Image (cartoon, rainbow, N blue to C red):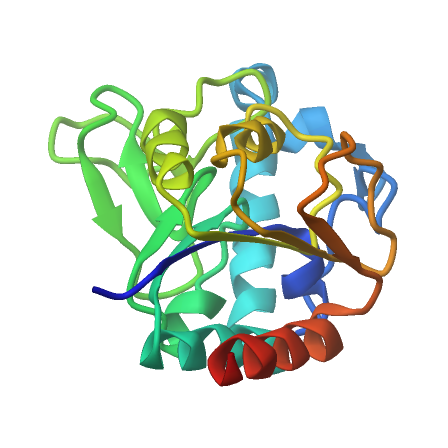
Length: 229
């Protein structure tokens, strides 16, 4: 039976493909505070602005490609049972070819009903506008978990992490909860690798290895090491 690797990825891995992150933009987008474009309150105040924000993010995502870190994680599947838990809403892990991906914060290329959250639709293009309705006649919104909303897949993510033989944490500040709390669900003796050029402070655990490299450097090197062990 293959050993299980759980991988938690954050904005840093997508940034290396050229996708801007809220961290890089000081939480601003064209002068708008992130809470104006990524919160239920912002949606109620100005749904048109929110839709335009995500239209531009989709447009940007269509113009970039998976990088060496995304591709190296696919290579891990040769030897391991790999489960990716991502805080990112882009589809770069899918496009690289990874098999098991759990999107904690939703998916950029999906819309969902504002009346029934179980009505979710794939988006063929990048544009979602006012007047685009679900089958029940309500406005569609991005299928994204906004600031202040519950993270419905966090329990599933915690269950995955509890059975990890290895835990890889890539390109995340470990500041956004509840995702940052997943670290504490790993079994006590599970080796943990933290890859980030600005590695965040983590609770002292004897089995954490910090690799202060960009994802495109650190991930391929670690994958090579794990495949050779």
